[in-house]
Length: 490
Image (cartoon, rainbow, N blue to C red; front, side):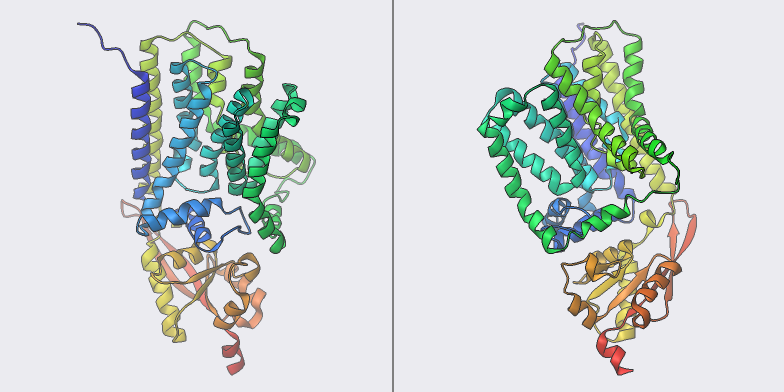
């Protein structure tokens, strides 16, 4: 009987569907949405054209989806694997421009050995959206660059703009593409192309309302960026070397499974012949290496720590680069083994995440959010004998109360109207707020900031239990921000 030939395209489609379903189910072991996911929902509800932390795009995606799914919080977990699915599809389409069908599929599958495409992608945020937007942007740039069709140029302009509206550091991808254009000696040719200007015009029009919003709000996000760029613990000149190396090392570590998988197949295989196309080599090499190198260069110049998660979208060309620059001869048996290994790694990441959910007593995983939100609201309304309209303080607890209280409560993050310009500062001042802090030091800082307007702290104790009954007690500090009339009544 003849052995059945594997249809790798069918296997690829089945794997993507399976992986999507798997990572929709895995985070259900958590009791609470991740902090960044809660934050995206709040941004989508209140922040039309900007926040003081990131551009608004993640909120535009999260909150409408939350409404469409009947405000079921766990439905939002669908968004992360959806972004991964879209990103891997774009990686495959881009890889297909340089590799055979089977190799392009395997290059796309190889991305699942990178932790950003599974374990770390659960927490829907700007980084996870970047996993989709970066390869989409690169795909339509490459198509436009080679085919010079207006449609592709316009799509590139749209995705480049959405990428910037998602996270400012997506400019690193644009810088990488500019490096490619300069290296490929195409600057003058593109400057004379009216379709390029059409793409730029579309991009600017999409981003312009956000730029106007930033100007109207004194570019407050610069303070957030500055807070993320402090010098850290290393004070000597060594930080200009240590921080970039740590960032590069983190990216290699997070992609270790991908390198090991490809390396193991490459070591025992007959080597193929690399295609000698200069433009292809430049594009793949630059888009695979330049984003990480640019971040490292920024760290080297500034001497500031680089968050490893900033590399989230930077490795989107890793699989394609490995297949292109280190070609080997494949047969059906090796392809089956390759797919099996990738599926096994993806399952191992899933098991690891479930194990974390089962074993942890972390407040971010095991907080009974609806119960805590209801208790805090009840304590405020019983004490103050009025409806709670604002909750301020710690970003985790403030957003949690706003999302799970079951009624309209506005979160004043870090208890600062300056950090929440979408709310009326006078209304907040007049109405007062529930104040919630992670610990006593944070609560004391709020009291110093507002002097006598915040009373002594009260404490609620949370019992955080894992699935085996291990319990950790967490103290949450809360109090009341007194409105003007209450203050004057004394």
